[in-house]
Image (cartoon, rainbow, N blue to C red; front, side, top):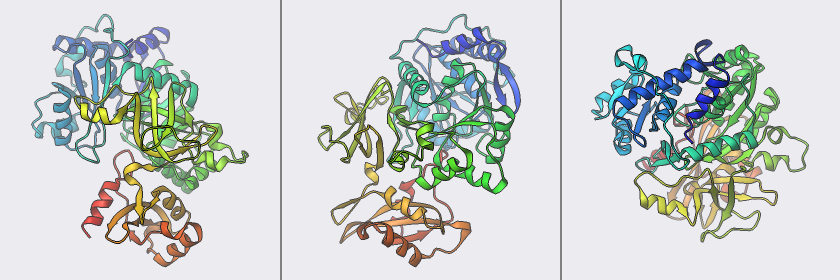
Length: 504
């Protein structure tokens, strides 16, 4: 079944429900949302787009993004959403690799793509001169099967050119059903606030809100501003938001500084990077039980494990800290195991590679059989993440396998060191990486952002680490930074930190 049927279903059931918002202004109810997506679909088909063709989306967060997404699906094509913060040349490479002859854009990004001399035709769907607004809506959504491509997601490319993850209609249906079962409920009275990039997890989570006829709110700023989020949540009420852990930390800091209570925020789902214990405890203490965690990858989007709001807020279970520091248990439509170097399952508590299989796992990478063969082994997705699973099924991430530091033959997990350093009052943010060393193989290096631009007190941090962790895990170097390099989703770019070390 084509995912676009969910928009048709919502429009039939609740045509007058408000659907798309730019800030606090409603620009479309569900009937109009469906009609505009249908018009785009009819126009795309008239332009020669056929089922299975790839159509790019290079847009900042805006209501038109969802019209583009469901219009592409209605036409039977596959969407190729592109990170709006990429350079024009990077976006052009993705379009070329995907074989997309057309890309739907916002005007500010069209210039960057045009300068990159992409051969793809660039279309601003809000431009009256395109003829889209005058096109006859497609009579029926074009049929697609569960195994047909819906979303071609390009990975971050931190180790080279990004790979195109083939996400099917069936995978996204499985993700949606798992959300309702394992993460949260959604009703027509709810509002999704898109403060994180719609080309990533936030856009994927539009599906459950379309299916239930909920409201879709794009902040006027086009991004993440805590004060704006608080205003929107208070205005709409029952607000849902997908956020990176760094966004949760910023929300908490802004709320405590301004006196905001988070009125109207009902659900904040965090994912995409390490959530440190001190940060989530502080967030729950301030906002209450509104937080949930999911763990996934593009290769199994938002759908590996989940930790529900009751578990995130629980302080009574004898092992609540362990569970809070986990990423939860396997979601309902996947299996998760911890594998050794040979892929064989390891006993509870042992550390190995996190493996997943099930309805939400990709069929492979786009036109990249070599990478597919390495990543999909005997039906299992080899995530490249290192972790352990306890006897109750809770999975705790250690680190990406490439981030583990091996010093003097011992494995050191950067997150463990980061957790300790973040408990020191002088540290605002920290990221730990390994630096090649002729004697030890690697040494531990901590990049530290001091609180309020204060001076870095290495001696104090050394004493603190000595009191909390084994000596072999302590950083050998502490390097101050004004801010950590991050991608637009808030994930720390450890590749850039390693590059800084190589240049010193």
